[in-house]
Amino acid sequence: MYYFDNAATTVQKPAEVAQAVYQALCCGRLGNPSRGAHAYSLEAYRQVLAAKDCVKELFHAGEEYEIAFTHNSTIALNMVLKGMLRPGDHVITTTWEHNAVLRPLYQLEKEGVQLDFISSEPVTGALRYDELEQKIRPQTAMVVCNHASNVTGNVLDIDRIKAFCQAHELLLVLDVSQSAGAYPVDLSGGVITAACFTGHKSLYGPGGTGGICIKKDAVVVPYITGGDGVHSFDYEQPGGIPGIFEAGTANVAGIIGLATAVKLRLEHGVDAVADKQKKLGELFVGAVREIPGILLYGDFSGPHVGVYALNIRGADSAIVSDMLWEQFEMATRSGFHCAPRMHEQLQTAQRGVVRFSFSNFTTEEDVLAAVRALQLIAAQPDR
Image (cartoon, rainbow, N blue to C red):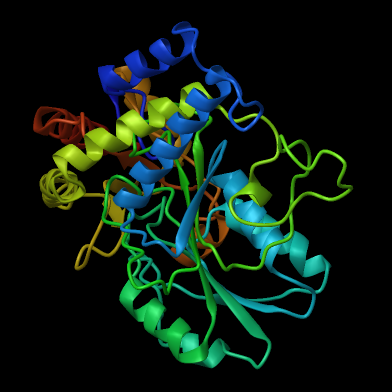
């Protein structure tokens, strides 16, 4: 079998990650962090702090940043967007966005937040950056961007976005769900207000892990309230970052597994991972472009993560994806990938796309097998 749905989640994880989670669960030494002064609680707290240091190192985040762990990037994005935006604020975002950004923004729009979208080119999905200056208003407070599209694999021109935000003194929130671990994420310089990440994709961590790397001086109201281990008589959630994001019990075993995965990524280097993905992508794109009847979506003239979307003539993407699984045991993803505006821009809102997404475990042999399968499907007369 072949697994090409890594943009959804990476099913192959380093053995060290599984071992770290197992040891955390069975060692009998980890209590509830920040919920006691005894050795069990303190050891868990130390492990969580060490994990935060690893993530900060991965993202090149300086002392002005803090890490808060959440269960995934969806929760992280909801906490940041709903915690920082107020009625009357204007937000600029893009047509690349996942519903983890879109749906919170739509909710906020009903409460008085104003939205504008930067559009994309058909087929390539390239962002029309020149629209940024056209969208700015006196009420503009924030730019929210997907660092790497989960549909096309295109990578944001982050330097251009950062320069725009600096020029207009705007908050900048990044969704790095697809890029973290697969492409460099650099928060040095302090222009990016917050980066929201998940652990189960290209960081190769456990599901149910993720978080926020956010500037310590960010002004946030709590989205989720509850126990924090201290201030028990206060009616409101205590302020301050990261505690304002950390009501309730942390997933200590998952965080330890995530930290192990991040350490491995730091040892091997994100650049090395990106280089491997680039080579696999060049092999895949170069071969698929030669297959009659296949249309590839994406801008391959610039940086890219290992995500590739295509269609075969007029076939529905679900039919092609089913054929890949049933005839070749290849797991791909069909449909709309929780990114409706991207499909409107690509003109695939009716049939979706077939998405291949590679991981660090994907080999050249796997990619060539995918190419052969696509050649055979595209050659069928009814496709």
